[in-house]
Length: 175
Image 1 (cartoon, rainbow, N blue to C red):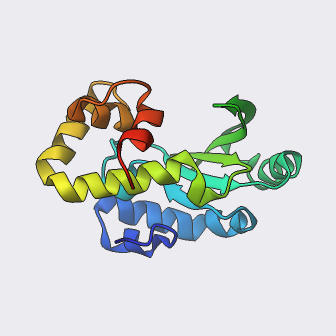
Image 2: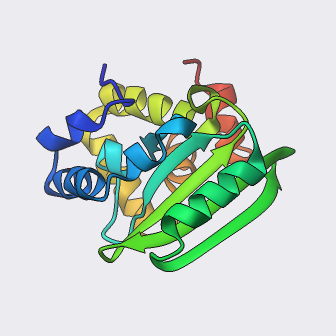
């Protein structure tokens, strides 16, 4: 099992993973977010990314306002910086989007510990599914993603899982 809480695995991965590793090291992005228990999630850790896929980082805040102030202070000078607050499935959520060296980054934060957030649970479930079903499954996912599906939508489509793919993936796959 890969330790997804430590990005060193990226260094030994695909060309894109190595580029993201270098970007995160050079920008010190995870160090700047260290207080918020950041974890890289999404498609890049699993090599399910497309050329336009962003770098997804989840965080945990104790104070939403403090987090928003911190993220704004640290990254507002980055290209296309925008911060939003909203409720996702009834949970107070903050996202910050920006570019570092032309690479899209999304920081997603909730009060929930990062290892209990949907993004981390999806990462672990998707990793196990990829291990079980192999390369043909990965290629099917990528094909559906090229046609506009998200990773979760593609997986649920392939496995015949109905309902909201973000919730159903966690509910139907025991991990």
